[in-house]
Image 1 (cartoon, rainbow, N blue to C red):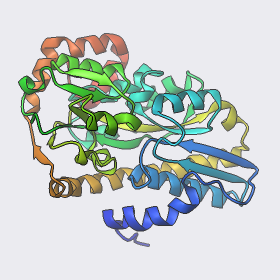
Image 2: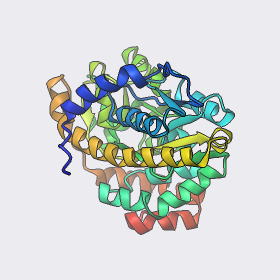
Image 3: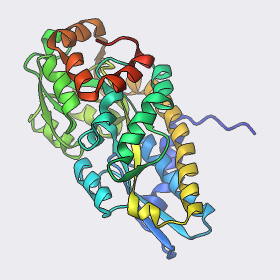
Length: 340
């Protein structure tokens, strides 16, 4: 049977309305044998949150009421670092963890986000469903949390700035105060480009931009839109400076306490939803530039070659090759081509 094409309007409208009341931060009225909390930083209207809620609902329905998974969107359970600590300690059972934040615990999870490494989604998914995904998943498992198989999409990241500065060149980034996630990789990347990166949790980003603690930030367009960052940013440079994803993590003790059939239900529901979310985000990105332009943002597309050259000169790639190790770096370069 053919699936009706999901438009962005339908996805963000009907999908979020149908699921929000039942799934976002409101546990089921009927007591389930296993009641799990899933934290995520994205708003309820973001494709990631919508597909997480669908997967949670499906797994619950297929369990005949034995399992209930409640999705807490929009950082309701804390900022990313706090939720990562909670899922490790067992305060929450599941977490959709941004790969950038996860890299503070699992450095190898930052490997796919090396600056200007991937040129297309074909390269990204070949790597993440292949060798790069394998080594990252193994590294995550060694830290005591259980990663589900498929990584979800967060998109290629772009740079936005306030009305005081449009970014077209490396020179424009010199001295630029930019928010980055709490991760060494992006701090290193923007320092190598001459900017002044500041690590701020996503839940505090809007306020930091509004009060001019930072001049700009970098994120995929989906988060610029759903986080309403266009209200406090004027320009967007389509830099595609790196790709990032989300890993679904389970507290090892909680997952080990589930019957095997429920673990299988969770894995199947969330991996299937990951495939749909990847497609959703591509479709959403296609329409977002026009939508954000209509809301007052101005777009430009810098030449990535100049940024790559500046990073080579700054020793960025050499530094991170040493950090990740020659073997992991060689696996990455199988999909990206030579980086150093």
